[in-house]
Image 1 (cartoon, helix red, strand yellow):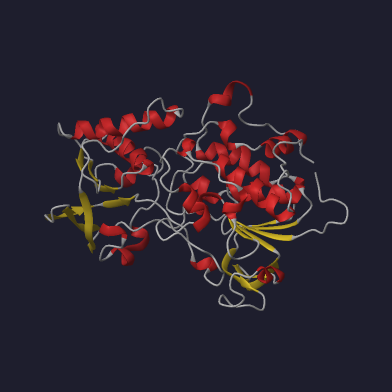
Image 2 (cartoon, one colour):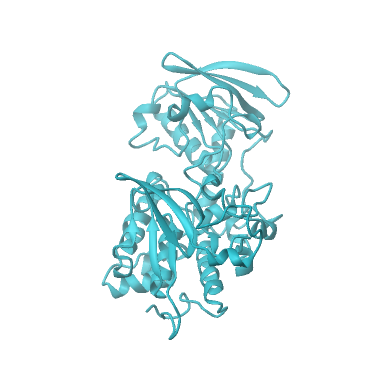
Amino acid sequence: MSLGEGAFALRIAVLGAGPVGLEAALYGAALGHEILCIERGEIAAAVRSWGHVGMFSPWPLNVSPLGAARLHKAGRDVPGSGPEAAEAPTGAQYAARYLVPLSQDPLLAGRIRQHSRVVAVGKRGLRKGELIGKAARGDHQFRLLVEDATGEHLEYADVVLDCTGTYGTPSAIGAGGIPAPGERWLGDRLIRHVPDVLGKDRARFARRRVLLVGAGLSAATAAVALAELGAAQPATQVVWAVRRRLALPYQPIADDPLPMRARLHQAANQVAERAAAGGPLSYRPATSVDSITAEGHRLRVRLQDDRGTGTEEPFDEVVGLTGYGPERDLYRELQVHECYASLGPMSLAATLLGQSGDCLAQPKPGPETLKNPEPRFFILGAKSYGRNSAFLVQLGLAQIRGAYALLHKDPALDLYAAPAA
Protein backbone atom coordinates (compact mmCIF):
# COMPACT_ATOMS: atom_id res chain seq x y z
CA MET A 1 0.00 0.00 0.00
CA SER A 2 1.18 3.57 -0.63
CA LEU A 3 -0.19 7.09 -0.54
CA GLY A 4 -3.28 7.45 -2.66
CA GLU A 5 -3.70 9.72 -5.65
CA GLY A 6 -3.80 13.37 -4.62
CA ALA A 7 -2.23 12.67 -1.22
CA PHE A 8 0.99 14.31 -0.14
CA ALA A 9 3.96 12.76 1.61
CA LEU A 10 4.70 13.88 5.13
CA ARG A 11 8.22 14.39 6.40
CA ILE A 12 8.31 12.16 9.48
CA ALA A 13 11.12 12.18 12.03
CA VAL A 14 11.37 8.89 13.91
CA LEU A 15 13.50 9.20 17.04
CA GLY A 16 15.28 5.96 17.86
CA ALA A 17 16.25 2.94 15.77
CA GLY A 18 15.23 0.26 18.23
CA PRO A 19 12.45 -2.29 17.70
CA VAL A 20 9.54 0.18 17.62
CA GLY A 21 11.49 2.96 15.88
CA LEU A 22 12.58 0.71 13.01
CA GLU A 23 9.07 -0.71 12.60
CA ALA A 24 7.57 2.80 12.63
CA ALA A 25 10.09 4.02 10.05
CA LEU A 26 9.44 1.02 7.79
CA TYR A 27 5.66 1.46 8.08
CA GLY A 28 5.89 5.12 7.10
CA ALA A 29 8.29 4.45 4.24
CA ALA A 30 5.98 1.72 2.90
CA LEU A 31 3.22 4.32 2.81
CA GLY A 32 5.39 6.67 0.77
CA HIS A 33 6.27 9.20 3.43
CA GLU A 34 9.66 10.91 3.68
CA ILE A 35 11.30 9.28 6.69
CA LEU A 36 14.26 10.41 8.75
CA CYS A 37 15.14 7.97 11.56
CA ILE A 38 17.63 9.40 14.05
CA GLU A 39 19.57 7.07 16.37
CA ARG A 40 22.04 8.29 18.98
CA GLY A 41 24.13 5.11 18.74
CA GLU A 42 24.10 2.15 16.38
CA ILE A 43 21.07 0.28 15.11
CA ALA A 44 19.32 -1.40 18.06
CA ALA A 45 22.02 -0.14 20.44
CA ALA A 46 19.90 -0.64 23.57
CA VAL A 47 18.92 -4.18 22.56
CA ARG A 48 22.53 -5.06 21.86
CA SER A 49 23.55 -3.77 25.28
CA TRP A 50 21.50 -6.55 26.89
CA GLY A 51 22.34 -9.02 24.15
CA HIS A 52 23.26 -11.75 26.65
CA VAL A 53 19.77 -11.68 28.19
CA GLY A 54 17.00 -13.92 26.89
CA MET A 55 13.66 -12.36 26.02
CA PHE A 56 10.46 -13.72 27.55
CA SER A 57 8.36 -13.47 24.41
CA PRO A 58 8.88 -15.89 21.49
CA TRP A 59 9.90 -14.81 18.00
CA PRO A 60 6.41 -14.34 16.53
CA LEU A 61 5.59 -11.70 19.17
CA ASN A 62 8.63 -9.66 18.13
CA VAL A 63 8.34 -9.77 14.34
CA SER A 64 5.75 -7.69 12.46
CA PRO A 65 3.90 -9.01 9.40
CA LEU A 66 5.28 -6.09 7.39
CA GLY A 67 8.84 -6.75 8.56
CA ALA A 68 8.52 -10.47 7.81
CA ALA A 69 7.17 -9.72 4.32
CA ARG A 70 10.01 -7.31 3.56
CA LEU A 71 12.66 -9.78 4.73
CA HIS A 72 11.04 -12.52 2.67
CA LYS A 73 10.94 -10.30 -0.41
CA ALA A 74 14.67 -9.58 0.01
CA GLY A 75 15.40 -13.31 0.20
CA ARG A 76 16.41 -13.09 3.85
CA ASP A 77 15.68 -15.50 6.65
CA VAL A 78 12.51 -14.67 8.61
CA PRO A 79 13.21 -15.63 12.23
CA GLY A 80 10.49 -17.40 14.16
CA SER A 81 9.02 -19.32 11.28
CA GLY A 82 8.82 -23.09 11.49
CA PRO A 83 10.08 -25.11 14.46
CA GLU A 84 11.69 -22.13 16.20
CA ALA A 85 8.37 -20.27 16.53
CA ALA A 86 8.17 -21.17 20.22
CA GLU A 87 11.74 -20.04 20.94
CA ALA A 88 12.49 -16.76 22.68
CA PRO A 89 15.59 -15.03 21.31
CA THR A 90 18.32 -13.32 23.26
CA GLY A 91 18.80 -9.61 22.69
CA ALA A 92 21.83 -10.35 20.50
CA GLN A 93 19.83 -12.79 18.34
CA TYR A 94 16.93 -10.36 18.03
CA ALA A 95 19.24 -7.58 16.86
CA ALA A 96 21.35 -9.69 14.49
CA ARG A 97 18.60 -11.76 12.89
CA TYR A 98 15.77 -9.25 12.69
CA LEU A 99 16.45 -5.63 13.61
CA VAL A 100 19.68 -5.13 11.68
CA PRO A 101 18.38 -6.86 8.52
CA LEU A 102 15.20 -4.77 8.82
CA SER A 103 17.27 -1.59 8.92
CA GLN A 104 18.91 -2.64 5.63
CA ASP A 105 15.61 -2.82 3.76
CA PRO A 106 15.66 -0.76 0.51
CA LEU A 107 12.72 1.28 1.79
CA LEU A 108 14.98 2.59 4.58
CA ALA A 109 18.09 3.12 2.46
CA GLY A 110 19.66 6.45 3.39
CA ARG A 111 16.90 7.21 5.89
CA ILE A 112 18.59 6.13 9.13
CA ARG A 113 21.11 8.50 10.66
CA GLN A 114 23.23 6.78 13.30
CA HIS A 115 25.41 8.35 16.00
CA SER A 116 23.18 11.42 16.03
CA ARG A 117 21.45 12.71 19.14
CA VAL A 118 18.25 14.71 19.16
CA VAL A 119 18.90 17.35 21.80
CA ALA A 120 15.47 19.00 21.73
CA VAL A 121 12.25 19.20 19.73
CA GLY A 122 10.22 22.39 19.38
CA LYS A 123 7.89 24.05 16.88
CA ARG A 124 8.98 26.36 14.09
CA GLY A 125 7.82 29.87 15.03
CA LEU A 126 6.05 28.82 18.25
CA ARG A 127 6.81 28.55 21.93
CA LYS A 128 5.28 26.04 24.32
CA GLY A 129 2.73 28.48 25.71
CA GLU A 130 1.35 29.69 22.39
CA LEU A 131 -1.82 28.40 20.71
CA ILE A 132 -2.48 26.27 23.76
CA GLY A 133 -4.37 23.13 22.78
CA LYS A 134 -5.11 24.52 19.32
CA ALA A 135 -5.11 22.40 16.18
CA ALA A 136 -3.37 25.31 14.44
CA ARG A 137 -0.11 24.24 16.10
CA GLY A 138 -0.14 21.40 13.58
CA ASP A 139 0.39 23.95 10.79
CA HIS A 140 3.88 24.65 12.12
CA GLN A 141 6.70 22.19 11.43
CA PHE A 142 8.70 20.60 14.21
CA ARG A 143 12.17 22.00 14.70
CA LEU A 144 14.75 19.46 15.89
CA LEU A 145 18.18 20.29 17.23
CA VAL A 146 20.45 17.37 16.32
CA GLU A 147 24.04 16.81 17.42
CA ASP A 148 26.51 14.51 15.65
CA ALA A 149 30.26 14.25 15.09
CA THR A 150 30.22 17.34 12.87
CA GLY A 151 28.46 19.53 15.43
CA GLU A 152 24.90 20.79 15.83
CA HIS A 153 22.35 21.34 13.08
CA LEU A 154 18.61 21.62 12.55
CA GLU A 155 16.09 19.26 11.00
CA TYR A 156 12.44 19.97 10.28
CA ALA A 157 9.52 17.54 10.18
CA ASP A 158 5.74 17.51 9.82
CA VAL A 159 5.41 14.62 12.26
CA VAL A 160 7.57 13.36 15.13
CA LEU A 161 7.39 9.80 16.47
CA ASP A 162 9.35 9.57 19.72
CA CYS A 163 10.44 5.93 19.97
CA THR A 164 13.51 6.54 22.15
CA GLY A 165 12.50 4.08 24.86
CA THR A 166 13.54 4.30 28.51
CA TYR A 167 16.66 2.09 28.80
CA GLY A 168 18.96 5.11 28.69
CA THR A 169 17.38 6.76 31.74
CA PRO A 170 17.58 4.47 34.76
CA SER A 171 15.68 5.38 37.89
CA ALA A 172 17.57 6.47 41.00
CA ILE A 173 19.02 3.86 43.34
CA GLY A 174 18.34 5.88 46.49
CA ALA A 175 15.41 5.44 48.85
CA GLY A 176 12.17 7.13 47.86
CA GLY A 177 13.08 7.16 44.18
CA ILE A 178 15.54 10.06 44.47
CA PRO A 179 19.33 9.79 44.18
CA ALA A 180 21.08 8.79 47.37
CA PRO A 181 23.76 11.22 48.58
CA GLY A 182 26.83 10.48 46.48
CA GLU A 183 24.93 8.64 43.74
CA ARG A 184 25.00 11.42 41.14
CA TRP A 185 28.72 11.99 41.53
CA LEU A 186 29.61 8.33 41.11
CA GLY A 187 27.94 8.16 37.68
CA ASP A 188 29.24 5.26 35.61
CA ARG A 189 31.03 3.79 38.62
CA LEU A 190 27.60 2.35 39.45
CA ILE A 191 26.19 -0.39 37.20
CA ARG A 192 22.72 0.55 35.94
CA HIS A 193 22.02 -2.15 33.32
CA VAL A 194 21.97 -5.93 33.48
CA PRO A 195 25.63 -7.04 33.51
CA ASP A 196 26.88 -10.16 31.76
CA VAL A 197 27.86 -11.75 35.05
CA LEU A 198 28.70 -15.19 33.67
CA GLY A 199 30.28 -13.88 30.46
CA LYS A 200 32.37 -10.84 29.61
CA ASP A 201 31.80 -9.15 33.01
CA ARG A 202 32.68 -12.20 35.08
CA ALA A 203 36.02 -10.86 36.32
CA ARG A 204 34.32 -7.73 37.61
CA PHE A 205 32.22 -9.77 40.07
CA ALA A 206 34.12 -12.98 40.82
CA ARG A 207 35.55 -13.08 44.37
CA ARG A 208 34.22 -9.60 45.11
CA ARG A 209 31.52 -8.15 47.34
CA VAL A 210 28.52 -6.96 45.34
CA LEU A 211 25.37 -5.03 46.24
CA LEU A 212 22.36 -5.69 44.00
CA VAL A 213 19.42 -3.28 44.38
CA GLY A 214 16.03 -3.87 42.77
CA ALA A 215 13.10 -6.26 42.52
CA GLY A 216 12.14 -6.19 38.86
CA LEU A 217 12.89 -8.79 36.26
CA SER A 218 16.26 -7.23 35.45
CA ALA A 219 17.22 -7.64 39.10
CA ALA A 220 15.95 -11.21 39.04
CA THR A 221 18.17 -11.94 36.04
CA ALA A 222 21.21 -10.49 37.80
CA ALA A 223 20.42 -12.24 41.10
CA VAL A 224 20.24 -15.68 39.48
CA ALA A 225 23.51 -15.11 37.62
CA LEU A 226 25.30 -13.75 40.69
CA ALA A 227 24.12 -16.71 42.76
CA GLU A 228 25.49 -19.09 40.12
CA LEU A 229 28.78 -17.21 40.09
CA GLY A 230 28.91 -17.36 43.88
CA ALA A 231 28.46 -21.11 43.81
CA ALA A 232 31.36 -21.46 41.36
CA GLN A 233 33.52 -18.85 43.11
CA PRO A 234 32.82 -19.18 46.87
CA ALA A 235 34.76 -16.01 47.71
CA THR A 236 32.06 -14.02 45.89
CA GLN A 237 29.61 -12.28 48.24
CA VAL A 238 26.32 -10.73 47.16
CA VAL A 239 23.79 -8.65 49.09
CA TRP A 240 20.41 -8.39 47.34
CA ALA A 241 18.43 -5.43 48.69
CA VAL A 242 14.68 -5.23 47.96
CA ARG A 243 12.74 -2.24 49.29
CA ARG A 244 9.52 -4.10 50.12
CA ARG A 245 9.11 -6.53 52.99
CA LEU A 246 8.59 -9.72 50.98
CA ALA A 247 9.50 -13.23 52.06
CA LEU A 248 9.94 -14.01 48.36
CA PRO A 249 10.56 -11.25 45.83
CA TYR A 250 8.24 -12.52 43.07
CA GLN A 251 4.63 -13.60 42.87
CA PRO A 252 4.44 -16.11 40.01
CA ILE A 253 1.69 -15.62 37.43
CA ALA A 254 -0.76 -18.53 37.37
CA ASP A 255 -0.45 -20.56 34.17
CA ASP A 256 2.08 -18.04 32.86
CA PRO A 257 1.94 -18.11 29.02
CA LEU A 258 5.60 -17.00 28.91
CA PRO A 259 7.63 -20.01 30.14
CA MET A 260 10.90 -18.07 30.27
CA ARG A 261 9.37 -15.54 32.64
CA ALA A 262 7.91 -18.29 34.83
CA ARG A 263 11.31 -19.98 35.06
CA LEU A 264 13.00 -16.71 36.01
CA HIS A 265 10.43 -16.01 38.75
CA GLN A 266 10.99 -19.49 40.15
CA ALA A 267 14.79 -19.33 39.96
CA ALA A 268 14.95 -15.90 41.63
CA ASN A 269 12.63 -17.01 44.43
CA GLN A 270 14.81 -20.07 44.98
CA VAL A 271 17.85 -17.79 45.27
CA ALA A 272 16.06 -15.81 47.99
CA GLU A 273 15.01 -19.01 49.79
CA ARG A 274 18.54 -20.45 49.76
CA ALA A 275 19.87 -17.19 51.17
CA ALA A 276 18.16 -17.95 54.47
CA ALA A 277 20.36 -21.04 54.82
CA GLY A 278 23.55 -19.06 54.33
CA GLY A 279 25.86 -19.01 51.35
CA PRO A 280 27.32 -16.42 49.01
CA LEU A 281 24.08 -14.43 48.55
CA SER A 282 22.22 -12.57 51.30
CA TYR A 283 18.60 -11.57 50.59
CA ARG A 284 17.49 -8.44 52.45
CA PRO A 285 13.88 -7.38 52.04
CA ALA A 286 12.61 -3.99 53.30
CA THR A 287 16.05 -2.51 52.62
CA SER A 288 16.91 0.68 50.74
CA VAL A 289 20.06 2.61 49.89
CA ASP A 290 20.45 5.70 52.10
CA SER A 291 23.85 6.93 50.83
CA ILE A 292 26.84 5.88 48.72
CA THR A 293 30.39 7.20 49.02
CA ALA A 294 33.67 6.30 47.35
CA GLU A 295 36.26 4.83 49.67
CA GLY A 296 39.42 4.20 47.70
CA HIS A 297 38.64 1.55 45.11
CA ARG A 298 35.56 0.47 47.03
CA LEU A 299 32.14 1.92 47.74
CA ARG A 300 30.71 2.46 51.20
CA VAL A 301 26.94 2.14 51.26
CA ARG A 302 24.56 2.95 54.06
CA LEU A 303 21.64 0.50 53.92
CA GLN A 304 18.48 1.25 55.87
CA ASP A 305 15.47 -0.91 56.60
CA ASP A 306 11.84 0.23 56.72
CA ARG A 307 12.10 0.74 60.49
CA GLY A 308 14.93 3.24 60.12
CA THR A 309 17.73 0.94 61.27
CA GLY A 310 20.85 1.43 59.19
CA THR A 311 24.24 -0.19 58.61
CA GLU A 312 27.27 0.97 56.65
CA GLU A 313 28.98 -1.69 54.56
CA PRO A 314 31.79 -1.80 51.98
CA PHE A 315 31.20 -3.15 48.46
CA ASP A 316 33.34 -3.59 45.38
CA GLU A 317 30.41 -3.12 43.00
CA VAL A 318 26.91 -1.68 43.22
CA VAL A 319 24.37 -2.90 40.66
CA GLY A 320 21.28 -0.68 40.72
CA LEU A 321 18.47 -2.25 38.67
CA THR A 322 15.63 -0.10 39.95
CA GLY A 323 13.75 0.44 36.72
CA TYR A 324 13.77 3.03 33.94
CA GLY A 325 11.68 6.02 32.96
CA PRO A 326 11.13 8.45 30.07
CA GLU A 327 13.61 11.20 29.25
CA ARG A 328 11.28 14.19 29.06
CA ASP A 329 13.61 17.16 28.46
CA LEU A 330 13.53 16.20 24.81
CA TYR A 331 10.01 17.59 24.39
CA ARG A 332 9.87 20.18 27.16
CA GLU A 333 8.91 22.89 24.61
CA LEU A 334 5.99 20.86 23.26
CA GLN A 335 2.50 20.59 24.69
CA VAL A 336 2.51 17.10 26.18
CA HIS A 337 0.02 16.10 28.88
CA GLU A 338 1.80 13.68 31.21
CA CYS A 339 0.49 11.37 33.88
CA TYR A 340 1.61 12.57 37.32
CA ALA A 341 2.30 8.99 38.42
CA SER A 342 3.76 7.10 35.45
CA LEU A 343 5.06 10.11 33.43
CA GLY A 344 3.55 8.57 30.30
CA PRO A 345 1.14 10.46 28.00
CA MET A 346 -2.01 11.10 30.00
CA SER A 347 -4.66 9.54 27.76
CA LEU A 348 -2.76 6.28 27.46
CA ALA A 349 -1.78 6.25 31.13
CA ALA A 350 -5.44 6.66 32.15
CA THR A 351 -6.34 3.63 30.03
CA LEU A 352 -3.63 1.53 31.69
CA LEU A 353 -4.49 2.63 35.23
CA GLY A 354 -5.17 -0.35 37.48
CA GLN A 355 -4.28 -2.93 34.85
CA SER A 356 -2.38 -6.11 35.65
CA GLY A 357 1.39 -5.96 35.68
CA ASP A 358 1.43 -8.89 33.26
CA CYS A 359 2.61 -7.55 29.89
CA LEU A 360 0.44 -10.07 28.01
CA ALA A 361 -2.65 -8.92 29.90
CA GLN A 362 -2.29 -5.26 28.91
CA PRO A 363 -5.12 -3.74 26.85
CA LYS A 364 -4.45 -2.47 23.34
CA PRO A 365 -5.76 1.09 23.65
CA GLY A 366 -7.28 2.71 20.59
CA PRO A 367 -5.49 5.29 18.44
CA GLU A 368 -7.17 8.20 20.24
CA THR A 369 -5.16 7.42 23.40
CA LEU A 370 -1.94 8.17 21.49
CA LYS A 371 -2.89 11.80 20.92
CA ASN A 372 -1.13 14.62 22.74
CA PRO A 373 -2.24 18.25 22.92
CA GLU A 374 0.67 18.74 20.49
CA PRO A 375 -0.70 17.77 17.04
CA ARG A 376 1.27 15.14 15.13
CA PHE A 377 3.59 14.36 18.05
CA PHE A 378 3.37 10.74 19.20
CA ILE A 379 5.24 8.90 21.92
CA LEU A 380 5.37 5.23 20.94
CA GLY A 381 6.93 2.10 22.38
CA ALA A 382 8.19 1.55 25.92
CA LYS A 383 8.49 5.30 26.50
CA SER A 384 4.72 5.67 26.08
CA TYR A 385 4.29 3.48 29.17
CA GLY A 386 6.42 5.83 31.27
CA ARG A 387 7.57 4.01 34.38
CA ASN A 388 5.25 1.11 33.68
CA SER A 389 7.46 -1.77 32.51
CA ALA A 390 4.65 -4.07 31.31
CA PHE A 391 5.37 -3.49 27.63
CA LEU A 392 5.74 -5.87 24.70
CA VAL A 393 6.75 -5.19 21.10
CA GLN A 394 3.26 -6.29 20.01
CA LEU A 395 1.82 -3.31 21.88
CA GLY A 396 4.23 -1.06 20.01
CA LEU A 397 3.08 -2.47 16.68
CA ALA A 398 -0.53 -1.69 17.62
CA GLN A 399 0.56 1.85 18.42
CA ILE A 400 2.27 2.23 15.04
CA ARG A 401 -0.90 1.15 13.25
CA GLY A 402 -2.91 3.59 15.33
CA ALA A 403 -0.60 6.56 14.78
CA TYR A 404 -0.57 6.17 11.00
CA ALA A 405 -4.34 5.59 10.95
CA LEU A 406 -4.70 8.96 12.68
CA LEU A 407 -2.30 10.69 10.29
CA HIS A 408 -4.18 9.29 7.28
CA LYS A 409 -7.59 9.80 8.90
CA ASP A 410 -8.35 6.21 7.92
CA PRO A 411 -9.28 3.87 10.81
CA ALA A 412 -9.06 0.87 8.46
CA LEU A 413 -5.44 1.52 7.48
CA ASP A 414 -3.43 -1.52 8.52
CA LEU A 415 -0.27 -2.63 6.73
CA TYR A 416 0.05 -5.50 9.18
CA ALA A 417 -3.17 -7.06 7.90
CA ALA A 418 -2.37 -6.74 4.18
CA PRO A 419 0.55 -7.88 2.02
CA ALA A 420 3.44 -5.39 2.20
CA ALA A 421 3.98 -3.05 -0.71
